[in-house]
Length: 66
Image 1 (cartoon, rainbow, N blue to C red):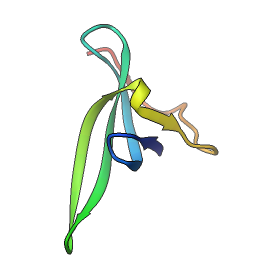
Image 2: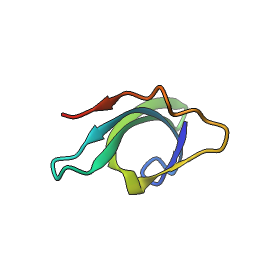
Image 3: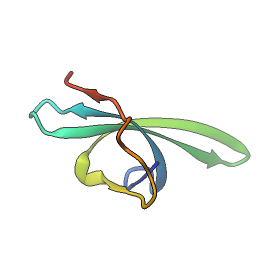
């Protein structure tokens, strides 16, 4: 789990991924509530968009160079 500005709160860190410019970004997923429905969302964000959360182990998060 991480905190994401795009998700406006906590999100799952699915993978670190290379951006087209060569910088690292992240593939994230989160859940939003819309009325009485839950919606799953995903995004590819820059590393600046996220903040690590205390107590989380990120050592097993996959890294993709695509």
